[in-house]
Image 1 (cartoon, helix red, strand yellow):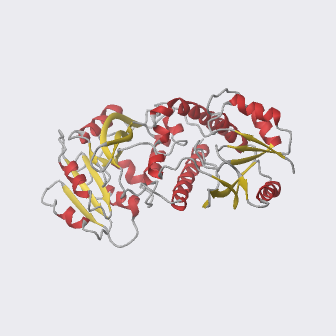
Image 2: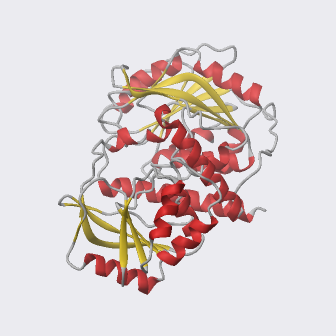
Length: 435
């Protein structure tokens, strides 16, 4: 089996992809996307090509080593639409499929050429993951997972993101998964609620930060009644005692979970279905603090003015002591009223802090998971309802060693990404089937 190699960066022009297709004259074409040395395990390339033949792969990629450390990757699926999906450095395409995909390219990109190619190839055949360690490469981006999380919303990458959104939108239209900007209306005055808004703080073992979060929530100034619902999921580090020290404030509602499994999603559901939950349920993570005393008022004003079922704000990344960290303010300005809910299938999150119209969330509920639960709900809401935005900084997101996503090992990061891809897959299938 013959193969020809081409070195290309991940952000590649359509013109470069066309050049490769024109020069490809072997059965398989390898694209190597790393600026590093590539070494194969003995017979690794032969094994990869063998699997490609046996599986009928349109494109194949494999687990590998980063230096001497194993670097497994995850399976590609229908909803794996992130443009930063990690294939490793080696992508091997069946040349006949690559050429067919390139012939169909009808847009010239400066950055999204390889992404456009991958999406088009996925329409022509399977993208196969060989879960065997077949080669060696050196990862050049050695930042912690918590630092990489925000690359897709870094303002310096805006030109790249515009192209990626355009390529993804075109793909969604081709497969019937794109939704026009038509939304169900909501009656935000319907129903009786004890208060207009509830700040929801789910927590487990946050003794270092829960007091700051509660004080921030209780100090809000509003022209309507609100409360603060703190849901403690069996903390054993002194968190519960700190929460109880605030129970003298009538605005505080304390929910102590039983010993069954809840995770963050289950803790949110406990707050949403509590009889004291307000008309709007507003997020505040137990690590973080609101930016000022007007955040709750801004949330409710946005619901009323924009007539939406969910509102997403803007936050600032800081260290534990509230000193700003790069990239600073995360405002998700890639969101547009017309295409935001389609582009949401490509990016890794919708933003924060989030506010929800309680009647709808009591119908939908959060998935009982400890990661991706907010993304799942946001996608589900956006399928039918308008999501509003606030571009003022609403809270300070503190990055520190205690964050659940600050520093993840490969297995944990893969597990999180696989789950979010499944969420995208289910949502994409639902959007296609509803038509």
